[in-house]
Amino acid sequence: MFAHLIQDPPKNFVEDPAPPVVPDAAGQLPRLASTFTDVDGLYYFTIVVCIFFFVLIAGVLAYTVVAHRRKTIDQAPASNATHNTPLEVVWTVVPLIIVMVMFAWGFKGSIDMTTVPVDARWYKATAKQWNWTFTYPNSTQESYGELWLEVDKNAAFVLESTDVLHAFYMPSMRVKRDVIPGRNQTVWFRPTEVGVYHLFCAEYCGNDHSRMYAKVNVVTAEQYASKPPPWVKWDDSTPSAAAASAEKQIYRTLCLACHTTNGAQLVGPSWTNLFVRQADGTVVGAQREVVVAGQRQTITVDEAYIAESIRKPDAKKVIGFENLPMAAFALDDQKIKGLVEFMKTLAPAAK
Ligand SMILES: [Cu+2]
Image (tube, rainbow, N blue to C red):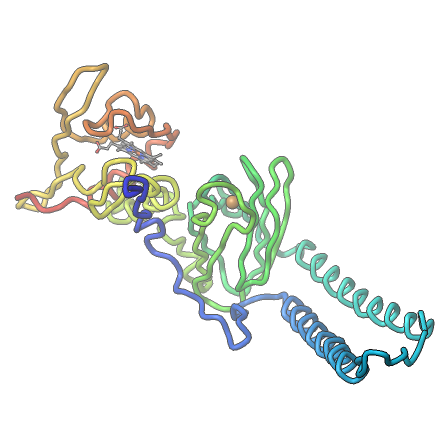
């Protein structure tokens, strides 16, 4: 009866995430790289204090209930004491001291995390529903949904939100900081091990909050200097595969909620049949049935059609999807070219 309401979740919303992180014996995510060792110390201190007092208080309580219970119906109370001042002072002052230790420890940690060392490289992380964009130091180059950092170099972030509250959360680095619209928050850390790490949004920010994911690559100095593809600016002499791989980031973060790369249909058509690979290996545009101002037309897919579909989605609506929405995206020519190269890599062989 409700079958029509059940939809398969998009299967490829994160095409290529970082490898899963296995919690350690204490159920904690392993601390893979961080300058902030205090976070774990305070966590374990708090857990030990909680367990100690739970056992102590529950033990005394259980013992008293059993040992001092009324054994006959007419047994008189053994004591009429209403309070005990020394005991009350002890159970107020001791927890106060413990809580002040936790406060001081946590406060120091939060100050450390936001006091950026002078030699840090500054990145900008822009959060919006529901993706992350990164801008690199002294550069206008951006990457989407994926970030590159150099190992053993302090990385500082200006955190910017263009819409609602988000939070920048990297469990392996032991950092979490709210991203607040209209206010520039900062956070920093030093990645100390080469690897691939997760970055999550940790502040509920709407429908696709759980998909607000970015992959963080911590690479060696040589790899960082060579500027990995999605980060470097490319030009017409760049091999098409490199251009495709550069702008695939856009697909991963902006388009995959509605378009798949495996033929499955979500809100919009899959991208697998936009181009066709011919027997000689050349890739040509496929035929497309569209509605233009109420008229049915057959067109051949080319870069201009793709650009128009992105910048003015309502100009030509694909048959079968006439009533489905796509928001316009203001992407520049270079990004659209890269996306076209990426779409071409999905072309099936001609029959
Ligand atoms: Cu968010």
